[in-house]
Image 1: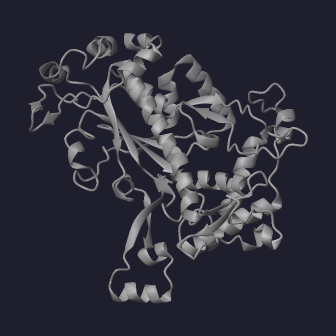
Image 2 (image 1 turned 90 degrees about the vertical axis):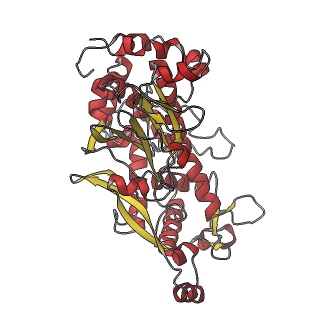
Image 3 (image 1 turned 30 degrees about the vertical axis):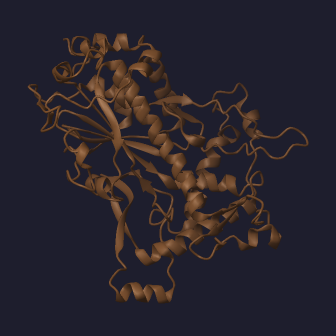
Length: 461
């Protein structure tokens, strides 16, 4: 269905009970046109592949990446008199999305892959405040088609694919992944923005963490002069619980970022159930470059000895043994001269210092906008008064952040050092079901009345 008329299913969707979506959510993998070649569920669909309509896909894209307006920011920006600092400057932005995002960083951008090609759904940081207000209004009105047109950027006229083999697609997923007729949602998380946002908070006086390099005998990671033992503000006492190795710190960043992918995948699963579609969420990160290369991302290389921070002798040994291989990782994506997703690090900034300062300006302009833009209202009745009491970061905090980030970049040649700046982990596929497959092999209850009525409600003209 590609006309502008709204199918009856869209009206019914507005009243679908959340409890029913939660209780009946299932991975339903067998799409129209699919085939299981062997085993007790061997079956070949008698139906041709059936692509989702524009309306169906727009609703799912809204669930995955829709913008809902401004966040509430309802926490203590400053402490009560006599209390320690609260870290009330942790937010990265004041925009909200359909799924949770730590500190409103919105690290995940979503690629939508179907028979007509590949598109990218823009993130909140890709819009002005006025555009955010407009999209939020469209969201409250349920105008999914209009939102979709604002979010979507065409990347390719082809269905993007990776080789249907290990390590790109695991054997148990080959039969049903990214098939003709399906719509494939692939989140890509940009990690440097979350990394920098957490670094500012980590080195702020409310936390005063100190980071050491576990690949360099746990020496300070560019932070020696900022430690309390040297007259600085960061707590470098090993027994204080404030000293972290780089790997533990970067793993924390990765957990924050990957949680966002899980939230948006759950949104898609619940929406699939409410609409009567099939689909499922699965692992989609078997290599650091598979999907990125297929999507046309710019790639860089990191050698084994650089990743290990190997000294001269170990580097020589690796080189003599022919084992100092380099491995690709993704840096960013530019389509038609437009940067769609890029990290805060070189080569997009001349130096790591400039990258840190650029993100710092972006963050502070967002969380203190009402100080300099009287027309900005946000969600507070007295936005300038509220934002005037959001604490600033100290110069020492900013300089410690720069020193640490320069150390990571200069030592390991990428940022983050262990994982690289871009990450895929999950994908969520949506498709029309072949109900005859489930009737053939399953007892009643494998699908609900919502799936049984889907075509009638969503594909009537």
